[in-house]
Length: 270
Length: 318
Image (cartoon, rainbow over all chains, first blue to last red; front, side, top):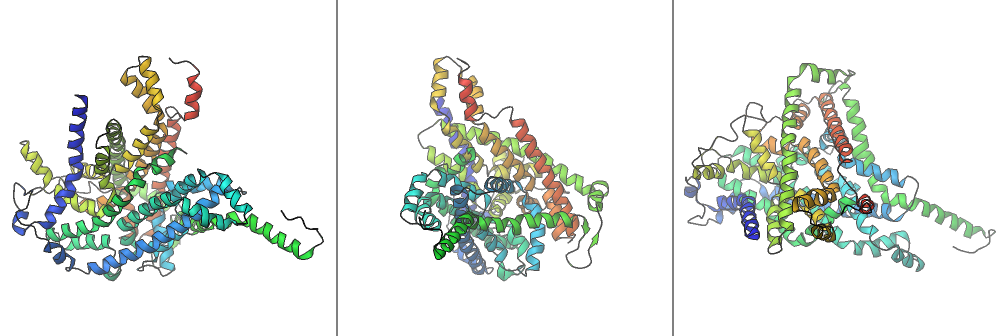
């Protein structure tokens, strides 16, 4: 009896969480006639797959996509390398200033983005980086506090004896990082890569502030601009929204095992 | 360690070099973060604090004005207080709802086995997509005539309101849309629930402790660190709320969703008054910091770390 009640509640609630996705997809694929019906059409009479192609060609979405891919690929590479190096440094060495520095690192997570956005804009402006993709890529090469924290927790679960054995065999500190810890960290790296991919792909405020030219837009910025101009072209907006959601959703399903493993949650305790 | 004689010149040099290398190695490994901290965090913080004492346009002459930016903001700029009030209202509703709803969803998921993966995924999916996509989706749900929400209400015989056009409802609409993305918080709490040792509940049940008391004296205290973490991150994200307001309501109608982050954003990138905007951002920083520290101090009363719990075990509660 209790279980039935629990499952009914869960089914209802999960339907509420999924319905918006369903609705968006159906909006993208509906015919123009089905669009403005009341009561709404939940199962379209005709499926118009060509809506996606038509929407795609209404603005240089191909260019936006290319920009998004460049940002995501290069910043993810940077994030994985830099955060794992820093995490290894904090996890495996004892050195003067380590603990205060680590506390500073943790504290940076509490700084609202708004405080940094204005000076960063000025900084990038001085460097001549405004209206380039650099502000969206380069900072990723300098490690992210949350990811360092996560990876450090992971490295600390590896027994120190493994490092020592390798050192006996003549491996230096970098070898130990590269040959031992990097492979061992793989699950955590998948998690970091996934989260960073999603952050970079979904980012809106960064592109909004740092990019001016249409030719530099990322997909999120492109969609929001398109939406601003063609508010009534609901079908096309829905189609692009579906396309924008697909990569993070696909990645989520691939990496789900790692995300749900609770690496994030369990790191909070430490 | 090599066992060479001190007199062996080249060996000493080599050993010296390796000693330096050993000393420098950790700093080399963490150097990406140190550099990033200097150039993308500390530098900008110092820079923006400096800017906040200046009249600082993007181009043109900058002049030192002392505390004038802060004074003007608090004395002569009604938008400062209005936007701050809207943000506080938003945070006061969003933060507790986010945590309580996440907690109950996590609790439900923790109590089932069949299809728990499916439900967990369903609740987490909205957290995976872009804020831009989220806004696009919700702008249709809220549409007065063709929206999904008003259709549902019409089934219940309610004449749906104009969600995004009504100054009283627009903020509610933003809160609901934000809560759609509670998956991350839920996941953290679920992990926390899973980590609570089953023996605690077994012992309590054997001793005849009722369910509500187990919840109050086992679940909540054991979940303390997680609740604290989600509490603080929710506060920070509530105060930073910008994307949804910027795109879904553009601060309207009648400025009813003009959040504090938007006020800062407009001063910086619409009016290009960088000094004034920087001052606003520092006000936000200080508020967030005070709230976080306040929550942490207050949490000392209700967060138990496992070590403490074990100590208390000896007191013989049962």
